[in-house]
Length: 249
Ligand SMILES: *[C@@H]1O[C@H](CO)[C@@H](O)[C@H](O)[C@H]1NC(C)=O
Ligand SMILES: *[C@@H]1O[C@H](CO)[C@@H](O)[C@H](O)[C@H]1NC(C)=O
Ligand SMILES: *[C@@H]1O[C@H](CO)[C@@H](O)[C@H](O)[C@H]1NC(C)=O
Ligand SMILES: *[C@@H]1O[C@H](CO)[C@@H](O)[C@H](O)[C@H]1NC(C)=O
Image (cartoon, rainbow, N blue to C red; front, side, top):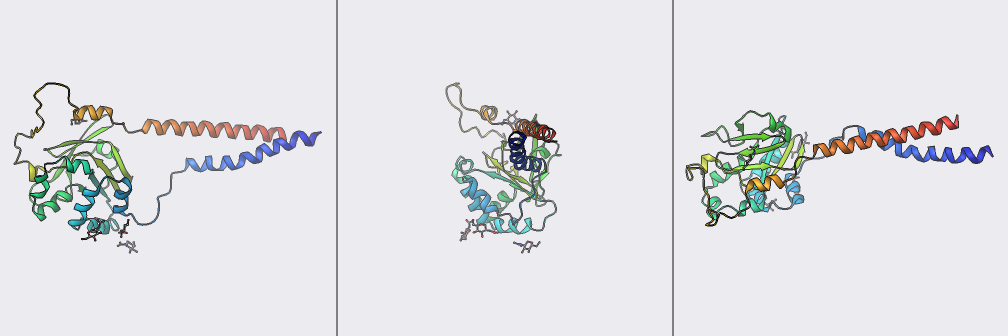
């Protein structure tokens, strides 16, 4: 009789053990993935960066950054305009640039330092880019409101919403606009209002602030929730295990 009551309890305890182990491991920080970082692969996986990859490749920057990534102690941050962002530019904007200016434009999208999204909340402006240190400033300006971060060149302002990668030594952020440096594009639009879409009717047009409001905010609270859920789950399972052990003893 005693055997028939204790055996199921022992079985429950045994079946709980495999669940307990991964729960404990989930608390530890995830180990950094080993193996080299392949910038091309990051963009190919994300899938809407053909124009950027082509420009990075044409200007030799793909190999340059890829190589330096291996030896940097500061890391790198790449601001990655989507294919849509490039397509929304007037076609002459890129085509009219000299090869040297194309290189500068690409270098302007890279900082010689790793920045997490939360780093942008406290960073001091202007932030140096790979194009800085030549003529002009070639800096980026960051503003934040809550957890929402904008990056501005003086010519364009873009919200940063999506990280393709955020792990030292490389951060990659999606941008819906190309970062046009004022050093190249500022003189052409001194009023800083290119305003190509001045619609006749004052009807509602989708503005960038609308897009921003609809954009998902950094889901840090979500993560906290799930972490809390895990802890509760762990406590419950552990408690159940202890009860079983108490019964067995
Ligand atoms: C990155 O991966 C691509 C294939 O997706 C490959 O052609 C390229 O050589 C790789 N680059 C490096 C630096 O490993
Ligand atoms: C870079 O350009 C070369 C030709 O110049 C080409 O063979 C190679 O596939 C390109 N790589 C990428 C990642 O586009
Ligand atoms: C990166 O550095 C490691 C050693 O730290 C070296 O073995 C490897 O060849 C380097 N890769 C490149 C692409 O330079
Ligand atoms: C970001 O830029 C948009 C316009 O592009 C503006 O409405 C918003 O207030 C800016 N937010 C911050 C935090 O600067």
